[in-house]
Length: 253
Length: 275
Image 1 (cartoon, rainbow over the protein chains, first blue to last red):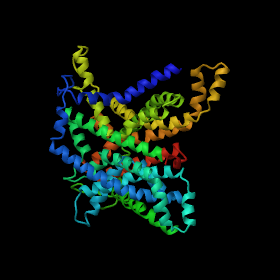
Image 2: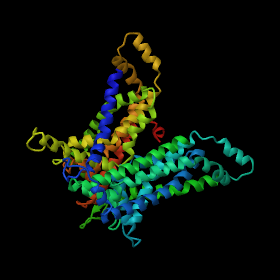
Image 3: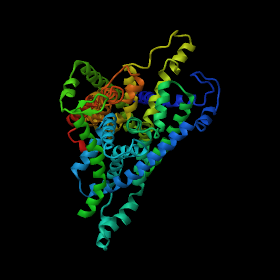
């Protein structure tokens, strides 16, 4: 039994990591096709000299950072308030937003923005993408904050209140400092979710707001490109590091 | 406290109202309108989009979505159960082993799909290798079919099955297995007759977490199915982009949403536990 489980688990881990490992191996392959022709850093250099990719990276960073800042502030406040007393309506809505298929969220936001533009004369662009990202990332922040608060010692805050602090002061000077690791973890999680999104982004993006996932999608459809392999490795490693840091922070708190 | 709480909740409530519910209401209104001559929507109100959604042509897409999601969920359970059992029973490195399962999930979904396309394409690694070894003459059609879609979904959502299964298996009382062994049950029998039934809550939670996103999948069938395996998500996208029939796309969106909510509600009565 023990040996069976070890073998089975090994096979599943291979299934999980082998495709990514292969991608990594071929990102340093000198040949353009899937045949090994020796080692090269060439594709990585090309990634950093590709204007479209760099622009996409820039857009993705602006969008993900904006959405993260907004969601982290709003989500932390909401998580704290929900910890004090649950609001079935807000928790239910957040949960529903988590369940909603991405494509449905995407087309409904598209329809909403297009309807709104009848009254306000603006167009789809970076800010519609940022608003869309805020709407689907918020739940992740609230989830992380609520999970942390579940094991949080409320008596510290009560002590502060007894000693004459106002509720805001108690929150600001006692709870927030103690919550910092969880807040940071929530922010990192939010960033990765936002940075990776393709489905919703592609629907609400305008002409000048092409993101990195949109470029990768277009390249993936066209065929094998070693440049995408290199880019994929860079993103996977980058996001992987963020997630590991987030996990550490969550455990530390 | 009441005022501070209201101030803290208001911005998030506003985000949900304006950027989640308002768009859904617009979609609801659009689904009941008529398609305009150049796309878009116009009056009169009509329920025609909903009647059309139940046309056999689209029923086929609905069934395909359901069986692809169901098959993917089943395969995830088959892969995840022994793995979760292995992690729960290992003496040390539990967290590390679990994190190794979760890590790929939090990195890019798009890139993980691309990685499989790189392996499965006609000019991909597997076909190149087989041709190089002269085992095949023409590339095998590994990509752009329903099988590839199921593979992509299983690969994408496996962690969602492992996590809740691990959570229940970890709490399992080891004495039960000792007792079963003392009474002569083989390890496989005790897993089948004791561990599996006791891990039902985790298994159900895992099934919800995998089945629901698979049902509404768009990216995986789009990329790995190559437009040949049309699921509900692809139908919605197509109506909003190339077909430009927003009322029909809206109706399908809402039906998909309804399906997802009903399935979740049926399978998990205590949805709060998941949040």
